[in-house]
Image (tube, rainbow, N blue to C red; front, top):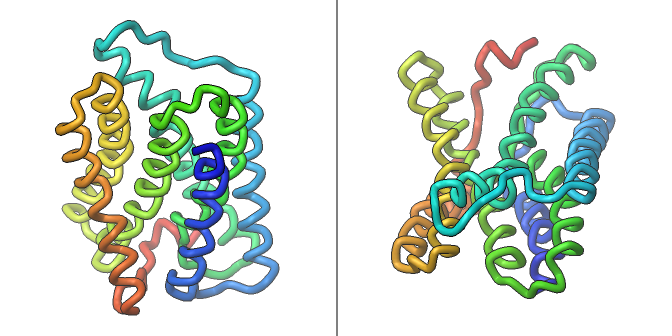
Length: 225
């Protein structure tokens, strides 16, 4: 389980790099800048994680356990990476004076690798599958699941699409936390149903990308700098 925790996200990033559509506006300098920014983001989160205990004190099987699942395990690192990624693309467009196609999933996967490395070191002795197996799966499923939602927003920008897309994007991390929570309180049937729902966007994304007919082609004005 420890090896799974260590290598799952790097393997996911390699797969994503192979199947994702070619991003427009990129050169070697921009790609390098993107990776460095993602690694810096992940390293800062990893340092904070290494020197901190759980941020939320949870007791028993109450709702505080769900909040703890969201903040300490299943969701917060993904949310922070996404927010940093959005700011990064705005800054990157201004620095390089050209329009870039956002690769939110790739940025998030890279930034989560250092965090998961630290978590694997901390969780390794516990041999807890909820930590060593489920957490990496939830992080990667959420990151890849963002892709079709941003595609939905970007292809035909509009108020309704924006509201629905943002609601769906916000729902994914909440759903990931719910999966972890349900497994923790041993409601396994509910947990597997929620996990299946969480995995559907990621699985469909991978299938469509491998067929080459699913990509972000239009960028909203908000990302033009």
